[in-house]
Length: 322
Image (cartoon, rainbow, N blue to C red; front, side, top):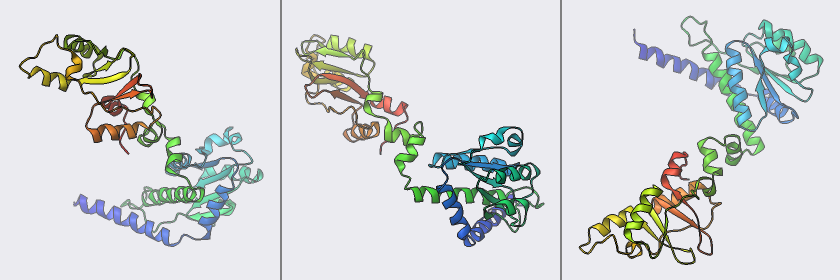
């Protein structure tokens, strides 16, 4: 038994069904899109069994791409949840046969309330096909299942049709990257577009020493600060220099090294600083990577230290450069 060949055949069967479905898209698809666009309430998706599982995924995709949507199981609808469907909503029902018992039982009630219905079924003459205001064909020539029983090709096609509708709606609404991120604030895109320096920078217990501090004091502050760096300020508490662990190692290599020397003598006098704490964290990461530094001091226009942003804080927060 050649399992690779069987798997490849599954791909071919499902790909062929998708191509044929794409070729037969017509004005009904456009009508469905327009109906959803005109919906003042929510797009409610329903279905039983595998169709229900696909419907739940479709509802999640619609909801995350600008179309307010949720999934409602027909059985739950029959036992009280039908009240979740309002007069301003649109129902999208999925049933390959168009005759799923739990689904067909709620259709008369849907029409009684004059709620628009989009029917995804393989049979236009089925109960669902006849009740639907807009019919979308999800018929397939055969399932990829060797027995021709398990929903495989048909569920793949239905899911793809849902994706096509979601993408068409995104285009029609002018849905942008920023809009998507606003629905996914915890995702990588949301972090990339919304998390700012001020959300991640450290502002407390910073390793700060003055210009008269010795290397010995700097080592203690560096150890306590756990940033591998100390910040040096003048008598006005304005940031003037930065001593990194690399600077300290280089100092150790000098013949006249002494812990009693001033830390300022070995520090970087013109370190990279930034003033805008509202800068996106992803942009800050670009600065850190391009300048090959680990710590970015945030300083006010007057020179006072506002905080620091360490590359590890960005990485731990899942921030990626733009």
